[in-house]
Length: 328
Image (cartoon, rainbow, N blue to C red):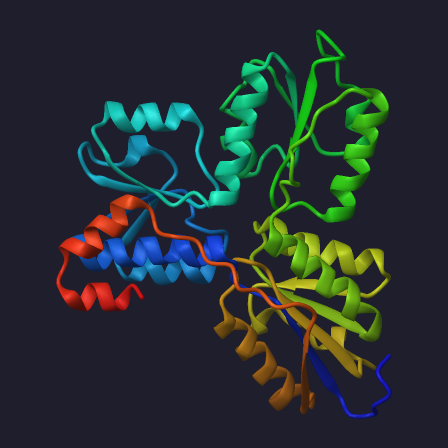
Protein backbone atom coordinates (compact mmCIF):
# COMPACT_ATOMS: atom_id res chain seq x y z
CA UNK A 1 0.00 0.00 0.00
CA UNK A 2 1.35 3.42 -0.85
CA UNK A 3 1.83 5.62 2.23
CA UNK A 4 -0.86 8.22 1.43
CA UNK A 5 -4.27 8.73 3.00
CA UNK A 6 -5.64 10.51 -0.07
CA UNK A 7 -7.67 8.40 -2.48
CA UNK A 8 -5.32 7.61 -5.34
CA UNK A 9 -5.46 6.23 -8.88
CA UNK A 10 -2.27 4.53 -10.02
CA UNK A 11 -2.34 4.82 -13.80
CA UNK A 12 -0.21 2.03 -15.25
CA UNK A 13 2.06 2.60 -18.21
CA UNK A 14 2.31 0.97 -20.69
CA UNK A 15 -1.40 0.44 -21.18
CA UNK A 16 -3.92 0.43 -24.00
CA UNK A 17 -3.28 0.24 -27.72
CA UNK A 18 -0.37 -1.87 -28.96
CA UNK A 19 1.33 -1.36 -32.33
CA UNK A 20 -0.71 -4.14 -33.97
CA UNK A 21 -3.99 -2.58 -32.87
CA UNK A 22 -2.96 0.92 -33.99
CA UNK A 23 -1.98 -0.54 -37.36
CA UNK A 24 -5.26 -2.45 -37.78
CA UNK A 25 -7.44 0.54 -36.89
CA UNK A 26 -5.40 2.80 -39.18
CA UNK A 27 -5.88 0.32 -42.02
CA UNK A 28 -9.68 0.46 -41.72
CA UNK A 29 -9.70 4.23 -41.28
CA UNK A 30 -7.43 4.88 -44.26
CA UNK A 31 -9.35 2.40 -46.41
CA UNK A 32 -12.59 4.25 -45.65
CA UNK A 33 -11.00 7.63 -46.39
CA UNK A 34 -9.35 6.41 -49.59
CA UNK A 35 -11.87 4.03 -51.15
CA UNK A 36 -15.04 5.24 -49.47
CA UNK A 37 -17.73 3.30 -47.64
CA UNK A 38 -18.67 0.57 -47.40
CA UNK A 39 -15.54 -1.34 -46.45
CA UNK A 40 -16.15 -4.89 -45.25
CA UNK A 41 -14.20 -6.27 -42.29
CA UNK A 42 -14.10 -9.97 -41.50
CA UNK A 43 -14.74 -10.38 -37.75
CA UNK A 44 -14.03 -7.57 -35.28
CA UNK A 45 -10.94 -5.70 -36.45
CA UNK A 46 -9.77 -5.78 -32.81
CA UNK A 47 -11.60 -7.10 -29.78
CA UNK A 48 -13.09 -3.87 -28.48
CA UNK A 49 -16.72 -2.88 -28.81
CA UNK A 50 -16.07 0.89 -28.71
CA UNK A 51 -13.57 0.66 -31.58
CA UNK A 52 -15.84 -1.56 -33.67
CA UNK A 53 -18.88 0.68 -33.15
CA UNK A 54 -16.85 3.79 -34.01
CA UNK A 55 -15.59 2.30 -37.27
CA UNK A 56 -19.07 1.00 -38.11
CA UNK A 57 -20.40 4.56 -37.81
CA UNK A 58 -17.76 5.63 -40.33
CA UNK A 59 -18.90 3.02 -42.85
CA UNK A 60 -17.18 -0.25 -41.97
CA UNK A 61 -19.41 -3.32 -42.23
CA UNK A 62 -18.36 -6.18 -39.96
CA UNK A 63 -19.18 -9.70 -41.13
CA UNK A 64 -18.53 -13.16 -39.73
CA UNK A 65 -17.52 -14.73 -43.03
CA UNK A 66 -16.16 -13.64 -46.40
CA UNK A 67 -19.23 -15.38 -47.82
CA UNK A 68 -21.17 -12.40 -46.42
CA UNK A 69 -19.12 -9.97 -48.55
CA UNK A 70 -20.51 -9.09 -52.01
CA UNK A 71 -18.47 -10.64 -54.81
CA UNK A 72 -15.68 -8.34 -55.97
CA UNK A 73 -15.94 -6.05 -52.94
CA UNK A 74 -13.09 -4.94 -50.68
CA UNK A 75 -12.55 -6.84 -47.41
CA UNK A 76 -10.13 -6.37 -44.52
CA UNK A 77 -8.92 -9.30 -42.42
CA UNK A 78 -8.83 -8.58 -38.69
CA UNK A 79 -5.67 -8.25 -36.60
CA UNK A 80 -6.12 -11.83 -35.36
CA UNK A 81 -5.28 -13.48 -38.68
CA UNK A 82 -7.12 -15.99 -40.85
CA UNK A 83 -6.72 -19.59 -41.94
CA UNK A 84 -5.68 -20.41 -45.54
CA UNK A 85 -9.22 -21.55 -46.34
CA UNK A 86 -10.44 -17.99 -45.73
CA UNK A 87 -7.88 -16.68 -48.21
CA UNK A 88 -9.01 -19.27 -50.76
CA UNK A 89 -12.66 -18.33 -50.25
CA UNK A 90 -11.76 -14.67 -50.81
CA UNK A 91 -10.03 -15.54 -54.08
CA UNK A 92 -13.03 -17.53 -55.23
CA UNK A 93 -15.26 -14.50 -54.60
CA UNK A 94 -12.76 -12.16 -56.31
CA UNK A 95 -12.53 -10.00 -53.21
CA UNK A 96 -10.04 -7.14 -52.94
CA UNK A 97 -8.20 -8.15 -49.76
CA UNK A 98 -6.39 -5.89 -47.33
CA UNK A 99 -4.66 -7.91 -44.61
CA UNK A 100 -4.59 -6.25 -41.16
CA UNK A 101 -3.15 -9.32 -39.41
CA UNK A 102 -0.74 -8.24 -36.68
CA UNK A 103 2.84 -8.97 -37.80
CA UNK A 104 3.44 -10.84 -34.55
CA UNK A 105 0.51 -13.14 -35.33
CA UNK A 106 1.86 -13.63 -38.85
CA UNK A 107 5.13 -14.73 -37.23
CA UNK A 108 3.27 -17.56 -35.45
CA UNK A 109 1.60 -18.62 -38.72
CA UNK A 110 4.98 -18.79 -40.45
CA UNK A 111 6.38 -20.88 -37.59
CA UNK A 112 3.41 -23.26 -37.77
CA UNK A 113 3.99 -23.84 -41.49
CA UNK A 114 7.73 -24.38 -40.91
CA UNK A 115 7.29 -26.89 -38.09
CA UNK A 116 4.64 -28.83 -40.03
CA UNK A 117 6.84 -29.01 -43.16
CA UNK A 118 9.64 -30.41 -41.00
CA UNK A 119 7.38 -33.35 -40.10
CA UNK A 120 6.53 -32.31 -36.56
CA UNK A 121 3.31 -32.78 -34.68
CA UNK A 122 2.32 -29.29 -33.57
CA UNK A 123 0.94 -28.34 -30.17
CA UNK A 124 -0.76 -24.95 -30.16
CA UNK A 125 -1.00 -23.44 -26.68
CA UNK A 126 -4.01 -21.15 -26.33
CA UNK A 127 -7.77 -20.78 -26.15
CA UNK A 128 -9.34 -22.88 -28.90
CA UNK A 129 -12.33 -20.57 -29.49
CA UNK A 130 -10.19 -17.44 -29.97
CA UNK A 131 -9.97 -16.01 -33.50
CA UNK A 132 -6.17 -16.08 -33.42
CA UNK A 133 -6.00 -19.78 -32.53
CA UNK A 134 -8.63 -20.65 -35.15
CA UNK A 135 -6.55 -18.91 -37.80
CA UNK A 136 -3.23 -20.48 -36.77
CA UNK A 137 -4.78 -23.93 -36.47
CA UNK A 138 -5.87 -23.65 -40.08
CA UNK A 139 -2.24 -23.58 -41.30
CA UNK A 140 -1.69 -27.27 -40.51
CA UNK A 141 -4.92 -28.71 -39.09
CA UNK A 142 -4.02 -32.37 -39.72
CA UNK A 143 -0.97 -32.28 -37.43
CA UNK A 144 -2.04 -29.64 -34.88
CA UNK A 145 -3.63 -30.03 -31.46
CA UNK A 146 -4.71 -27.19 -29.16
CA UNK A 147 -4.07 -27.32 -25.41
CA UNK A 148 -5.31 -24.80 -22.86
CA UNK A 149 -3.98 -26.19 -19.58
CA UNK A 150 -1.31 -28.49 -18.14
CA UNK A 151 -4.04 -31.10 -17.56
CA UNK A 152 -4.83 -31.15 -21.28
CA UNK A 153 -1.15 -31.80 -22.05
CA UNK A 154 -1.45 -35.20 -20.40
CA UNK A 155 -4.13 -36.18 -22.92
CA UNK A 156 -2.00 -35.33 -25.95
CA UNK A 157 -0.90 -38.24 -28.16
CA UNK A 158 1.39 -37.89 -31.19
CA UNK A 159 2.74 -40.40 -33.76
CA UNK A 160 6.38 -39.68 -32.89
CA UNK A 161 7.21 -38.15 -29.47
CA UNK A 162 10.62 -37.10 -30.80
CA UNK A 163 9.12 -34.92 -33.55
CA UNK A 164 6.95 -32.44 -31.68
CA UNK A 165 6.89 -28.63 -31.66
CA UNK A 166 4.85 -26.04 -29.81
CA UNK A 167 3.67 -22.49 -30.45
CA UNK A 168 1.55 -20.16 -28.32
CA UNK A 169 -1.20 -17.64 -28.77
CA UNK A 170 0.26 -14.14 -28.60
CA UNK A 171 -2.08 -12.90 -25.86
CA UNK A 172 -1.63 -15.52 -23.14
CA UNK A 173 -0.72 -14.95 -19.53
CA UNK A 174 3.04 -15.35 -19.12
CA UNK A 175 2.51 -17.58 -16.07
CA UNK A 176 -0.21 -19.59 -17.80
CA UNK A 177 1.98 -20.22 -20.83
CA UNK A 178 5.00 -21.09 -18.65
CA UNK A 179 3.06 -23.79 -16.78
CA UNK A 180 1.77 -25.38 -19.99
CA UNK A 181 5.15 -25.25 -21.75
CA UNK A 182 6.83 -26.86 -18.73
CA UNK A 183 4.22 -29.64 -18.85
CA UNK A 184 4.91 -30.13 -22.57
CA UNK A 185 8.66 -30.35 -21.97
CA UNK A 186 8.15 -32.95 -19.25
CA UNK A 187 6.02 -35.09 -21.54
CA UNK A 188 8.08 -34.50 -24.70
CA UNK A 189 11.72 -33.85 -23.65
CA UNK A 190 12.80 -33.26 -27.26
CA UNK A 191 10.02 -30.81 -28.11
CA UNK A 192 10.96 -27.78 -30.23
CA UNK A 193 9.71 -24.26 -29.67
CA UNK A 194 9.99 -20.87 -31.38
CA UNK A 195 13.36 -19.11 -31.33
CA UNK A 196 11.68 -16.16 -29.56
CA UNK A 197 8.54 -16.45 -27.47
CA UNK A 198 5.25 -15.96 -29.29
CA UNK A 199 3.59 -13.93 -26.51
CA UNK A 200 3.71 -10.40 -27.87
CA UNK A 201 5.68 -7.55 -26.33
CA UNK A 202 2.53 -5.58 -25.43
CA UNK A 203 0.88 -8.50 -23.65
CA UNK A 204 4.08 -9.13 -21.69
CA UNK A 205 4.67 -5.46 -20.83
CA UNK A 206 1.14 -4.88 -19.57
CA UNK A 207 1.32 -8.00 -17.41
CA UNK A 208 4.69 -6.95 -15.97
CA UNK A 209 3.23 -3.54 -15.14
CA UNK A 210 0.34 -5.19 -13.30
CA UNK A 211 2.74 -7.44 -11.39
CA UNK A 212 4.74 -4.40 -10.30
CA UNK A 213 1.85 -2.18 -9.27
CA UNK A 214 -1.04 -4.44 -8.20
CA UNK A 215 0.50 -5.25 -4.78
CA UNK A 216 0.39 -1.50 -3.98
CA UNK A 217 -3.32 -1.26 -4.72
CA UNK A 218 -6.57 -2.26 -3.05
CA UNK A 219 -8.19 -2.84 -6.43
CA UNK A 220 -7.24 -3.17 -10.10
CA UNK A 221 -9.54 -2.06 -12.90
CA UNK A 222 -8.79 -3.24 -16.45
CA UNK A 223 -10.46 -1.37 -19.31
CA UNK A 224 -11.22 -3.83 -22.08
CA UNK A 225 -13.94 -5.86 -23.75
CA UNK A 226 -15.11 -9.24 -22.48
CA UNK A 227 -13.80 -11.04 -25.58
CA UNK A 228 -10.33 -9.46 -25.33
CA UNK A 229 -7.92 -12.24 -24.37
CA UNK A 230 -5.06 -10.00 -23.25
CA UNK A 231 -7.41 -7.87 -21.12
CA UNK A 232 -8.76 -10.94 -19.32
CA UNK A 233 -5.21 -12.09 -18.66
CA UNK A 234 -4.46 -8.82 -16.84
CA UNK A 235 -7.31 -9.54 -14.44
CA UNK A 236 -5.94 -13.04 -13.87
CA UNK A 237 -2.43 -11.73 -13.17
CA UNK A 238 -3.74 -9.43 -10.44
CA UNK A 239 -5.96 -12.15 -8.99
CA UNK A 240 -2.94 -14.43 -8.68
CA UNK A 241 -1.35 -11.68 -6.58
CA UNK A 242 -4.51 -11.58 -4.42
CA UNK A 243 -5.46 -8.09 -5.57
CA UNK A 244 -9.17 -7.84 -6.42
CA UNK A 245 -9.53 -7.07 -10.11
CA UNK A 246 -12.35 -6.43 -12.56
CA UNK A 247 -12.63 -6.13 -16.33
CA UNK A 248 -14.75 -3.15 -17.36
CA UNK A 249 -15.98 -2.09 -20.80
CA UNK A 250 -16.11 1.55 -19.64
CA UNK A 251 -16.73 3.63 -16.51
CA UNK A 252 -20.42 2.71 -16.50
CA UNK A 253 -19.49 -0.87 -15.56
CA UNK A 254 -17.89 0.18 -12.25
CA UNK A 255 -19.93 -0.91 -9.25
CA UNK A 256 -19.82 1.40 -6.22
CA UNK A 257 -19.50 -1.56 -3.85
CA UNK A 258 -16.13 -2.45 -5.43
CA UNK A 259 -14.78 0.85 -4.10
CA UNK A 260 -15.92 0.49 -0.49
CA UNK A 261 -12.93 1.00 1.84
CA UNK A 262 -10.65 1.31 -1.21
CA UNK A 263 -7.98 3.99 -1.01
CA UNK A 264 -5.83 3.04 -4.01
CA UNK A 265 -7.08 1.91 -7.40
CA UNK A 266 -4.64 0.67 -10.05
CA UNK A 267 -5.95 1.32 -13.55
CA UNK A 268 -4.78 -0.20 -16.83
CA UNK A 269 -6.19 -1.10 -20.23
CA UNK A 270 -5.91 -4.04 -22.58
CA UNK A 271 -4.05 -3.71 -25.86
CA UNK A 272 -7.24 -3.05 -27.86
CA UNK A 273 -8.81 -0.48 -25.49
CA UNK A 274 -8.62 3.21 -26.51
CA UNK A 275 -7.18 5.82 -24.16
CA UNK A 276 -10.41 7.86 -24.19
CA UNK A 277 -12.11 5.10 -22.18
CA UNK A 278 -9.30 5.21 -19.61
CA UNK A 279 -9.68 8.97 -19.32
CA UNK A 280 -13.41 8.58 -18.69
CA UNK A 281 -12.69 6.11 -15.87
CA UNK A 282 -10.23 8.54 -14.28
CA UNK A 283 -12.80 11.34 -14.50
CA UNK A 284 -15.52 9.15 -12.98
CA UNK A 285 -13.29 8.06 -10.09
CA UNK A 286 -12.34 11.67 -9.44
CA UNK A 287 -15.74 13.36 -9.70
CA UNK A 288 -17.98 10.60 -8.36
CA UNK A 289 -15.80 8.62 -5.97
CA UNK A 290 -13.30 11.15 -4.61
CA UNK A 291 -10.10 9.72 -6.14
CA UNK A 292 -8.50 13.12 -6.60
CA UNK A 293 -4.86 12.05 -6.79
CA UNK A 294 -3.71 10.48 -10.08
CA UNK A 295 -0.19 9.10 -10.33
CA UNK A 296 1.10 7.64 -13.58
CA UNK A 297 3.45 4.72 -12.95
CA UNK A 298 5.64 3.94 -15.95
CA UNK A 299 7.25 0.51 -15.73
CA UNK A 300 8.91 0.57 -19.15
CA UNK A 301 8.77 2.62 -22.33
CA UNK A 302 7.13 1.33 -25.51
CA UNK A 303 8.15 2.65 -28.92
CA UNK A 304 7.09 -0.16 -31.27
CA UNK A 305 5.50 0.71 -34.61
CA UNK A 306 4.49 -1.53 -37.50
CA UNK A 307 4.38 -0.54 -41.15
CA UNK A 308 1.16 -0.56 -43.15
CA UNK A 309 0.44 -3.32 -45.72
CA UNK A 310 1.37 -2.60 -49.34
CA UNK A 311 -2.27 -2.26 -50.44
CA UNK A 312 -2.74 0.66 -48.04
CA UNK A 313 0.64 2.24 -48.81
CA UNK A 314 -0.18 2.20 -52.53
CA UNK A 315 -3.62 3.67 -51.86
CA UNK A 316 -2.12 6.50 -49.79
CA UNK A 317 0.33 7.41 -52.56
CA UNK A 318 -2.43 7.34 -55.15
CA UNK A 319 -4.83 9.45 -53.06
CA UNK A 320 -4.98 13.24 -52.65
CA UNK A 321 -2.41 14.70 -50.28
CA UNK A 322 -4.96 15.18 -47.48
CA UNK A 323 -5.28 11.40 -47.08
CA UNK A 324 -1.53 10.93 -46.99
CA UNK A 325 -1.21 13.55 -44.26
CA UNK A 326 -3.98 11.88 -42.24
CA UNK A 327 -2.08 8.60 -42.33
CA UNK A 328 1.04 10.04 -40.70
